[in-house]
Length: 319
Image (tube, rainbow, N blue to C red; front, side, top):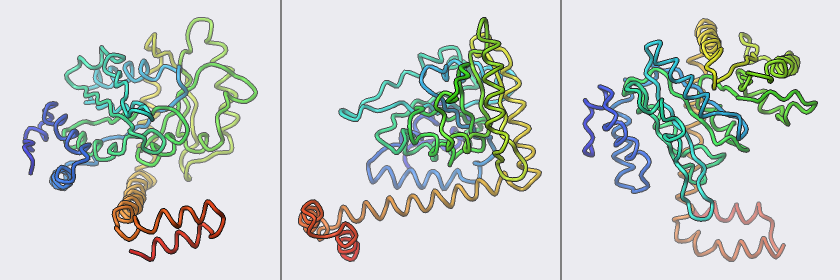
């Protein structure tokens, strides 16, 4: 199984973990087989962390918040892994991968592991292998996994489908349109945290909090949790502990109500369905008959001489 030392990985060796993630992210078929073998081997050691998704509009201070939050967790004796998804260029495929420089203090902590991963055009900007990377981090003994999204479009839905708790960061701005937050995001969020609640913005942050609490009033997540709204200042490291206490309260309530592990099981089932779709699509594209017929059928759809449904049906029947 590749050249990754499983014992070192289980002991939390960061070099072994980084190599394992690189293997999982590889697009080579031989590496994919090795990666799945590795994941099967470490599966018994996974699932013991709390997985937290963190999203928010650009400029909300995600990196500053994550650094302050991560340092607090480490001070409480936790091991923290940060999976920060960087936007890839749609033209050249490159990405900035600047999270280690933006979280300089956290990256120097022995009990922190920061892994920036390019989104590579994956739906919503979530790295395609984020789920597998979470499992590897859990196997390496990390108690808290933070998944930072690009914060645009579909990414919130993708992250919410793979974490235990989904947190959306906002800025103090109690506008009538609630900063343009979509109802769908309101339904996904387990909590909103208004960052930058410091200096002259404290009163505005409180008014914003009231607006969101009113908006959340009718939204329940299951039968046991009404999404909460908190304020904090990541820059001044103020009320960060309140955010962690809220997440711990949610986790305990979810476990007590048999919802915590049910949600994970449901997420795994959805992950399976997604992978089946992806593999079938890949098989279709590689099929010689499909490659031969596709241009003619695409042209027929573009010329309006056949319906997309009939064209798709002919392609699928070639398998």
